[in-house]
Image (cartoon, rainbow, N blue to C red):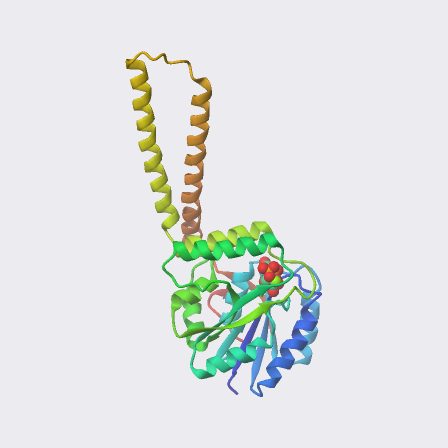
Length: 318
Ligand code: UDP
Ligand code: MG
């Protein structure tokens, strides 16, 4: 029988939430009265996530489990879920119940009206630190300014995509993936449903500052070359202003205004310029590093075990 909807749930050390998530997802999906599958992607968890999902998998034929050989990251886990999904529609949802599963029904309604991408727009984010809220808001606005791609503001990966869109995503082989941007880039008929982002049901965030920064860098560098342009504008402006300064110095010398040995100013200027140069090198490095990642052509992820489901994909090694 055709699968009506595949639900992808990436998990990294989610032992405290997974049973609840499963129960609530099951309730919601049973309401559709259609055939569905829930694909749990275990992104190299070190806790009891595997054990718990395995027992769920044994008792419920709707459940599949994809196990990575190590932690490959949230975006890669979602990509693997897409590779293994066979539904006519595909839903991506976090494991921690911050995205209420009940919204999936609204998404399915919109999909049946003919929309091919239905993303969840966060009206409010509960239980997240002020720092996270502010940086997230800022990030989406900066990203919007830097890129031509339509990436809707305040949306996460909680969304429904049509089979056709999922197939497009599967064809995109880039390694540093920013899925919400890729879906925006793909186009299709898109709409949103609004929801309030709940507090994490249990456990702690699996996105520490380090991962947030690299995620933001992926978002920007995957969809914009502007940082490189800005880098060269800064370079040009600075060298022009240093010429002006040189002129001033020469003028002082010619007019014999007294060239006081300006050790402090030299050091200050040096530090400033060196700082700028290093920063701009860093920007270049971000892009070069990504070119390097692409050129290695390693698989995006390695699957150690796939349960409840048989589907091989050329991107993974089993
Ligand atoms: N996650 C993952 N791999 C990672 C980090 C996170 O699969 O390396 C999953 C995590 O289990 C959760 C989702 O990605 O289902 C979002 O993570 P989290 O809720 O910790 O992020 P936040 O909501 O705090 O941004
Ligand atoms: Mg979360």
